[in-house]
Amino acid sequence: MKRKLNQVKTFFSKPYNILLVLFLIVLTYLVVFPLFSIVKDTFLVHSAEKSRVHQAVGSLTAYHWNRTFASVYSKSLLYEPLAHSLICSISACIVAILIGGGFAWLVTRSDLRWKKVLTKLFIFPYIMPSWTLALAWKNFFKNAAVGGATGIFTALTGIATPNWFAYGPFPIILVTGLHYAPFAYILIGGILRNMDANLEEAAVILKTRRLRMFTRITIPMVMPAVLSTVILVFSSAMSSFAVPQFLGLPVRYYVLTTELYAALQGTNPGVGYILAIVMIIISVLIMLANQKLIGKRKSYATVTGKSANVSLFHLKKARSLLSVLVLCLVLCMSVVPLISFLLQSLIIIKGNYSLSNMTLDFWIGSSKGGNDVMDKAGILINADVWKTLFNSLKLSAIVAVGAGTLGFLAGYAIVRRRGSKLSQIVENLTFIPYLIPSMAFAAIYLSMFSRPHGIIPSLYGTFAILALIGTVKYLPMASRSGVNSMLQLSPEIEEAGIIQGIPWVKRMAKIIVPIEKSTIVSGYLLPFVSSMRELSLYVILVTANNRVLTTLLFMYDEKGWEQYSNAINLLIIFVVLVVNFAVEKLTGASIEKGVGGGN
Image (cartoon, rainbow, N blue to C red; front, side):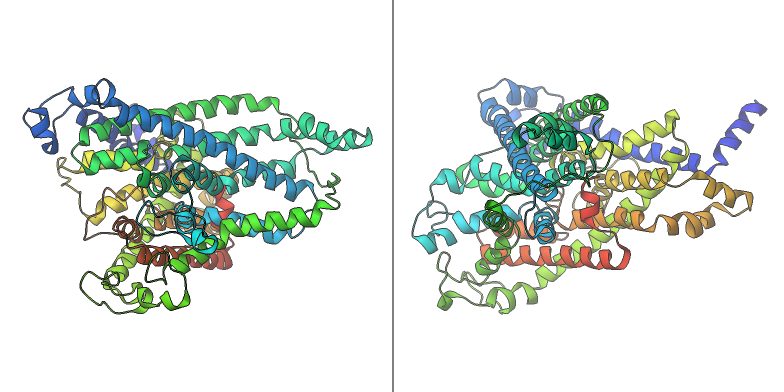
């Protein structure tokens, strides 16, 4: 007995063991327990369903499962949205790889002009919120069939865009693919820059045709990055809510996320929870596929050196033309959307882009009252906007501090006990929130925290639930950053401090944190920026009192107040860019540097 007590005492004398045990307890409650809670709620009658189910609230029922999988409503509730999600996600992968991978090859393997500028602009859309390109598409190509007003394209050309082009799967696929094309560029471009050049040099010496060299050498070399891109883009596209909501809803084109939102906002919460479970299962299958592919990547032994000596492919006469075309594409992805937001925020009558129809009232005008389009004050003098901006900044700061600090401590503890079962369990628990789509994760917390649990009261409608879910959801980003930073730090550095008798807190503050400052700051920056531009995680949890900028934009767009929503979108982009720029200048950390390692 005394020996066991001594073993326990010795175990808890190590700070990293204490941290691991605390993380195990807390993450079990915040990650594992909610999964059981949402499964339980699929078998319970909810108050919104009482009149339809004809059972007492809280009683057990199989009604939701039957309605979702085996009723006349199953097609519209599950099977069609699931098919739409799969079609859009797979197609978006193709678009992202073709555009991102093609751009990566041009930058690393050809004599394309203006590479530095083009690269900066190409990364830009990924830094912006995911719905940015979706709103821009609406601004340019909307037609009179929905809302009565036409977009910029019709105003300039007089050509009315057909429904299939303006709304539905085509723009959803294209916009989603363009948004994640920078992600493909980062992954594929990284391989192209660092892969072994010997095979390509040998092929050049043997006068192998460029096309044959590309298909037989280059493509096999970058295949691991392509597979990673497919998995990650597919996962992100499957969990996307804003893009299909903005571009699919006008023509009633539903995917899993938009159907989930409709179910939870309506009278089908039980069905909504089942859809959330379906999304989680799909995410787990994606993770398993990714792990299987990672296991196969060991066979790609060609990525071993630097490609500095590879001769660039000379575009010859096509160089200038191709450079201009790439520049135009990149400008359409990064700069043109911002111009469209500005234009839409200035016009009084929708569809009329003449100077006489423009005003700054949506920015700085006072409220005119009544039912006029300008019945609210401009966003820069609007108390609601300033309140939601403050809420967004406060929420993002709390999430950044929470996720960043916990992620760093988790990374420290995981690496110090690397190889132990406890370390492996905690590492897996910190990663689980990454696998759960944001909308499904919000549904889980809505299910769990809409009622009291012991000493923990109901959190629905409070600011606390937003801070809690944001911290847990973005913990994987920060913990990955923490693990990577600690793996690069030799344990001998801390051991030297232990020998000198320096306390653990002082060792962290004076030794470890200063050495890993840049990586740690990235662990704070990623959750902050992600929270500032997050919509799907918060949209079903906010109330009028704790609304944030993204959900205010969403509400304004739903009500048809596009001038205000476009102005708010510019405000969000401005805040994200200013924060990213300031942190990069002060510390050297930036969201671009963290994109490849990361909603």
